[in-house]
Length: 169
Image (tube, rainbow, N blue to C red; front, top):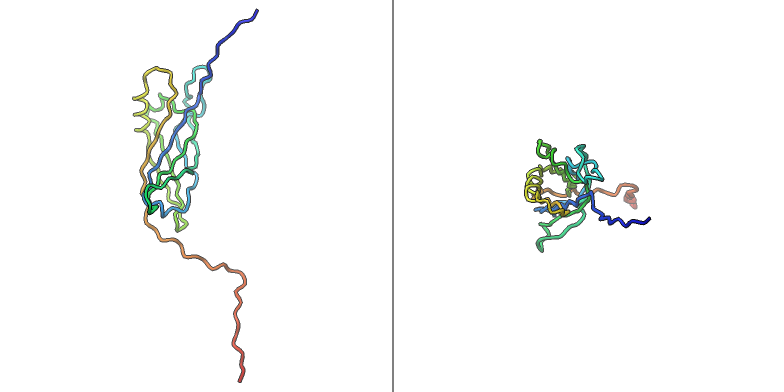
């Protein structure tokens, strides 16, 4: 006896699109790893619902697009997959933070932490209809970096020969 079973594959993960508008990007040497807290550690494969246990996701903002010809403003972006967030955790007051770590031209780390809970609450409010769509979660931040001077170049060290003048009298 053979029976055909139609199976529709459904993702248990959601794409999270991070977009950061940065003023003063010319003061940034490079990005260090960033992270987002409050997201679910797993999802139930049968119900496709995110679990209540939370975890921190790390990501790198490695996509950069300059907004002007002076290269002082840019949009940094990254997309990553996660098990989304548990709606009950959100309703009960779980805070969702994104921490961005900029390495400035003076070789100092400049961390920026932003509470993105209101953006997730708005996303949930707009997507509570049951239409079985797997829609991305978009998060947008605005950051202004401080104006800093680059560290002066250091001498290469090592062998630095010097000569004494000859006494040719």
